[in-house]
Length: 305
Image (cartoon, rainbow, N blue to C red; front, side, top):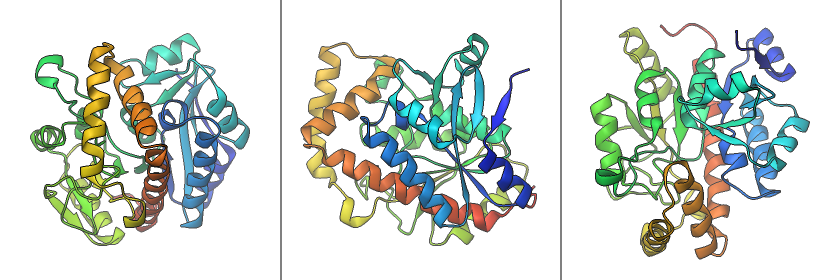
């Protein structure tokens, strides 16, 4: 049987009946350069604590699924090289081989559900990549949202994606997409994707009520809470559009594909924005963590189904 290891902080939170918030690890290993990645990870964990919840960063280390990482483990992960990027398809293989892996949105949702954690904060979700009509490059995140009962708080789909097609797939899969505090769907670094979200809510309590109602109906799957980046940290979509187009052309010319696409595009946009995208990324992740903690506190630890 796969060994699941809970950090002392997570175990203490469970014993005290305190709410937990899951955090992914791919953003640490594949999303930001060192030491910014470690600084961000520690800031995000503290943001969750400050809101009254307990963080549980998830990763595979030494062939074990860790739910919650101690500070030394976070530091080691932030400096690690050649860490696998895990999703549903390869998570078990990494565990069986005794390897190390960072969890994507999909893998973190799976681990969170195994650990009894209902809410998960991340940056942005994966989705339908541009040109997917020929590449069939569609993130496993979308199907995971349709099957795993974890609420994901993100700044919307990543801006590098085909957002209208991503939303069509989510609708087909029956995933509730809830814009927080506005009607427009946010698009990662930008507050609006230029389209309206299917649902909206203005308070964490309203989102918690939706989660309880879906559980009461016996519907499988989770929720996507689309939380707009703070206004002062936004990069307007009009500014980003030509830079994203350039990065996509470069990726195609270099035949970057599959799991390598997103890290390549994020790195190129970081370079093309002179680092502004990284500053915005950190701001939106922290903003999402704070909202996730508030939702977790509203849900509490009582059964919702």
